[in-house]
Length: 80
Image (cartoon, rainbow, N blue to C red; front, side, top):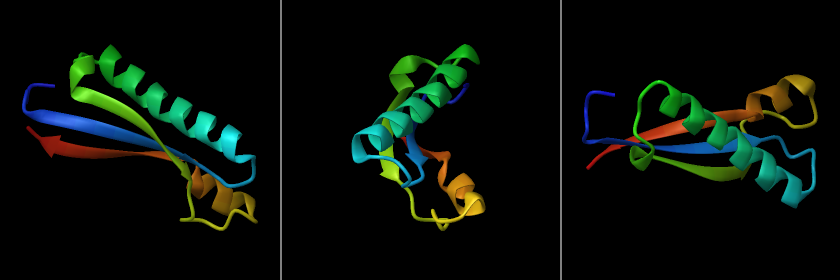
């Protein structure tokens, strides 16, 4: 919040158990929810971006535990 040089790119991910169009929508919605939260905590919108990372393959999408691992948001910080 206090370091005006920091920028955050938030990528939302989901599991691969849905259609490609649904995956993209859910992943972007997840990233946008994180952006909204950060804005509510006082981070300027201009310092944030949301993208859909699509379907993730960290966990095994054939199991519930793996699907839970794949449903996430990642934050990449950069200095400008």
